Image (cartoon, rainbow, N blue to C red):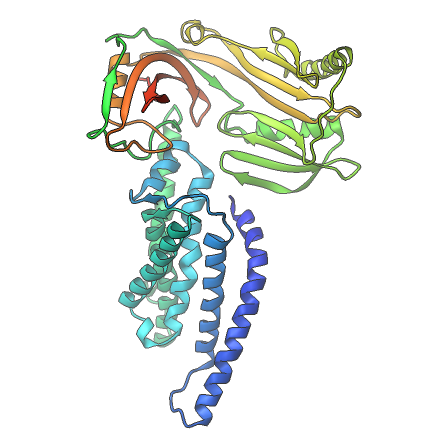
Length: 475
């Protein structure tokens, strides 16, 4: 989710928060006036009322955004690994992951900014930390208890840092107003946290840019705890491996390529774009529409280079074999004209409504044949009428041979499994029984589009099929 999507999600929430906040403000104001009429001596200034009202609205929006706008899909998950978000963002080199870190800080900045306005008791550094921790821990606990989110230590850290950043800015403003001059100490308090993260992300960008290869999303955020897992090796693992070929696809993590594909589809199918490009994880999404007002979605996955075009309203249409092949011939001619259909791709039809082209190379050929190659498939579900298909899925990558690289042996890679240095969606538990029964050298794309060799170990976990991937390149 990008910042624009967050704003769009907040807009309806802001209306609810404003109404509730105004009602609360009115009730409190009436109660205060009644208190003063009956001889109350404590004076509450207008800006304290405004700060209180703003904090109420802020809390309502945060609760709506972090809890009530979600379904109960998480089942009480807990992540106590500090900085796991940074490791995940680095491994995937994911813009949305970095944005999430920044958003979690920005979301709590208003808390630290407004608290000092309530009074002297909430103006101290210690008070800000205690209140911020209480609120963010309360929200994380509520998420965990209701299944509407994950209790994450990283979120507590970033929420608290965001609150402190807001406090630093307000503290600097109050100091400048009191001293009637700008001091270095005030400016340092105002900008030390934002500048720290600017330097952090800049350093990560410089480091990433300086390395030839990209990062691998298959690397784990945290290691599995293997000391209480029963692991059995049921295959032989060689201590030596032949060098393997390294490739690169320039369609991956390439927004210019995605924009070219969108432009091609717009021109051919006479589509128009609506709104901006949105981000959802690895997906970059364009909203399009035709001259009849029907909506379509173009989705480009930066991690794989695959893209698709599909209408928002899908309708299946069975066709006679001759008509289906005729549609396939027409689409194939158009794809070939634009260099999108390799000559060696095999054409077929399926399910009486789908045409497809396939290219397949074995992992053994990929690792040993030192030449450029295309791999993947194209799937199109033609519409009964008109040019625009019901579904177009393009998953062919043009892989350019780079060089031969040394790889670790299967035995060396297996040591990573024993160390728990591999990715799993659900973590291993005490007394789990893992049986590793086979392996193969396969390939995955990294965040710069390099097609890297990796080992895929297979077997069973508590009787169920299990597999994981271990990077094979030697450092």
